Image (cartoon, rainbow, N blue to C red; front, side, top):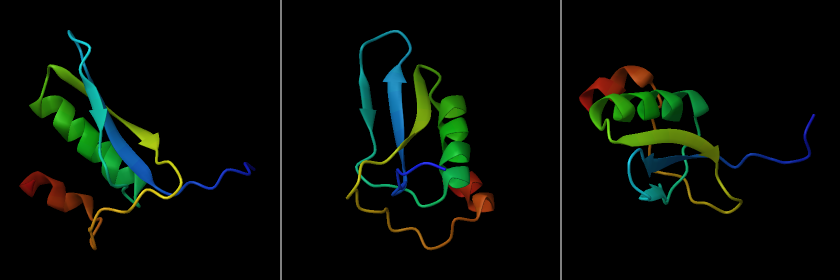
Length: 75
């Protein structure tokens, strides 16, 4: 078991043909939710690769109260 405590997950992205990259400023509590959101964004924005990384300690959480992935279709 790891000594590192995960404080959440951030959504990161990088350009497939350029050096553009970035990440969300807020963390998600549900890894499953953010993985599915990354998949959704990869289908929508084919020029970017979205992926999930562990959030640095102290990263604030995004204001989501329902991490039910069924709601992703409405985003």
